[in-house]
Length: 362
Ligand SMILES: Cc1c2[nH]c(c1CCC(=O)O)Cc1[nH]c(c(CCC(=O)O)c1C)Cc1[nH]c(c(CCC(=O)O)c1C)Cc1[nH]c(c(C)c1CCC(=O)O)C2
Image (cartoon, rainbow, N blue to C red; front, side):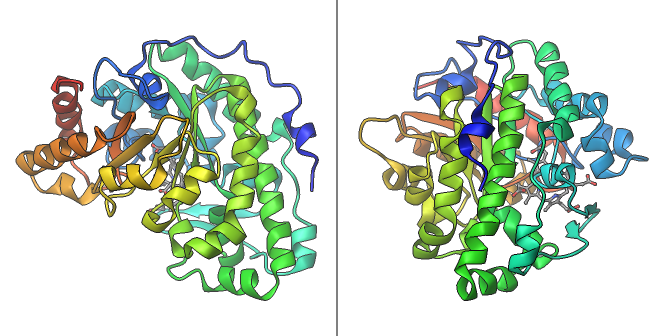
C-alpha cells in the first residue's frame, strides 16, 4: 500500500473560493441556508438536449478528458435549472483510465473492463494513479471555479467497493457474484485490491480539491448489495481511509449509495459529513440512523427519480414531504434518491427547483 502521507503531501488550499453564504455549503455544515438547497445526481447528461448536442460526436471517456467540454457540460444544468451546486462532469472510472487500466464506457451499458481483475497477481500488477494523468480534470475544475460565480462545485470519486465491482465483474452487474466470490474466498487479495482502489480514489479527489472543488461526494453506488456486517468488514475500512485522507482539506464530504438503508449509520461512521439517502428510507428515519453526538446531522436526498414522470402535482407533493422529513436534520440538501433518468423531461426539474426555492426555510 502507498503511504497515505505521500498521497497527502502538497495540497494547496489557495485555489478554493470563499463562499460563506452558498446555501448548499451552509446546509452541508449544518447551518440554516437562505433557501432549500438542491442539486440532482446526474443533472448533467442525457436528459438535456444541449448535452446530447455537444456529446453527439464525442465518446464519453474522450469528453471526460477534454477540459473545455467538461466545463460546458458541467455548466449546462446550472444555467438551465438554477441548481445550488454544480457536479463535475466526469465518471467514477476516469481515474482508472488515467492510471492505465484498459476499459471503456459503453453507451446504454456502462463501464466495460477489457481484462477483469480476479487474481492476486492481477491485483499486484494494478497501476497507481499519478496526478499528472488527471491534469485535464484539474484544468476543468479551474475553468469551472472561474465560471461558476457563487455556485459551489462538487468533485467526486467512486468508493473502493463500487470500483472493485466494475473491475472484478468486468462490467455492470446485478448480483455482484464474482465480486463477492473474491471477497469471501480470498480476503487478502480482496483487501489488497480495495487498498489500491482507495489510493486511486484519494489521489483523484485530492487533485480535484487542490484545483478548487468546494465539496466532494464519494459514490459507493453498489454498497447496498452488502449486509451491514460485510460492509463493515470488507468495504468500510477502505472508504474510511479515503474520507480520512481528505479531512485536512476542510471541504464537506458527502457519502452516497443506493439501497443502503441498513448501512446509513456505518456509512456515516466511515467519515461522512453528509450522508446521501436513496428514496427507500424516509429522511427523518435516516436522520435517526446517522445521528452522531457532537456533530451536525446532515442528509442529502431523496426523491425517487421515477416521481419526475408523475406530473407536477405529484412532484410537488413528494418534494414537500421530503422537505418536511428533512427538518429532522441539522442540514438537508435536496436531491434525488439516485441519478436523473435519461428520458426525464428537464422542464420538470427546472420547475421543481423553482418550487423548492420558493419554500420558506425552517
Ligand atoms: C456507478 C457510477 C458510474 N458513474 C458514476 C457512478 C456513481 C453514480 C451512480 O450511482 O449513478 C458517476 C457519474 N457518472 C457521470 C456523472 C456526472 C455528473 C452528474 O451530473 O451527476 C457522475 C457523478 C456521468 C456519466 N456517466 C455515464 C454517462 C452516460 C454516458 C453518455 O452520456 O453517453 C454519464 C452522463 C456512463 C456511466 N458510468 C457508469 C454508469 C452506470 C453509466 C451509465 C451507462 C449508460 O446508461 O449509458 C458508472
